[in-house]
Image (cartoon, rainbow, N blue to C red; front, side, top):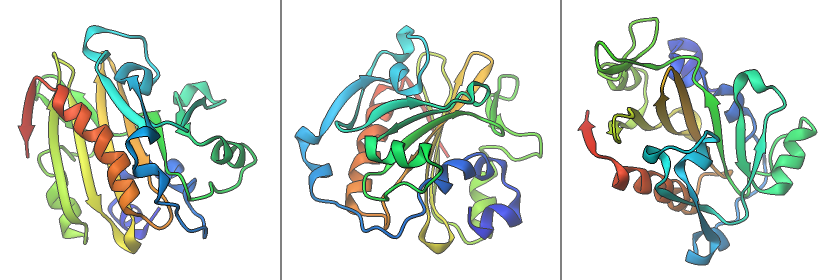
Length: 216
C-alpha cells in the first residue's frame, strides 16, 4: 500500500491493501492479447461477486477469458479471486503475481458500508461518499471519480483514482443485504491500456445495468 493510505487511514483504501500486495512484480505487462474481443467471456454479476443469484445480479459482465475463479482458504474474509491460473499458483505459494494479467479480487468490506438511514456509503470515522473525493484530493490523488450506481434497490459505489507511485485504484462497493462486498481490479505491472480495457468492460457493464445513478 502506498504512503497515502498509511497517512490518511482511509478505510476504503486500507481495505484493499492485501489485494494490492499481490500485484508487486517487476515483470512487464503483456498488452497484446487481452484487448481482443475474443479474449473475454461473460459471467453474471452475482457469479463475479461469488454470491447467490438474485434478479438484481443476473446481468452479464465481461471478464478476460483466461481468468478462473479461486476462493480464499480464509472463509471469514469472503475472499474470491478471478485470475490467470499462473498468478493463482504464485499467490498460493506466497509469491507476487506475475504482473502480466491483472486480476479481480472480491472481499467483504472492512470499511465502507451503506447507511440506509442516510442513504449513503459511510465508515466509522466520518468518511462518506460525499467527502471521500475531497479527502483523497487533499492528499495528492488525481482524477478522482466517486459515483453511485444503484440497481433495483442494491446500492453500489464506484471509486476510481490515481494514487501515489503510479498506483491505480479501481473499486466497486456493493451492498448485499446486511453485507458489503468490495470488488477491486488489480492491474498489470506497469498499468497499461489493456487494464483500461479490462476494467472498462466490467465497469461499463455495471453502469449500463443500473436503474438509478447518483453522480458525485
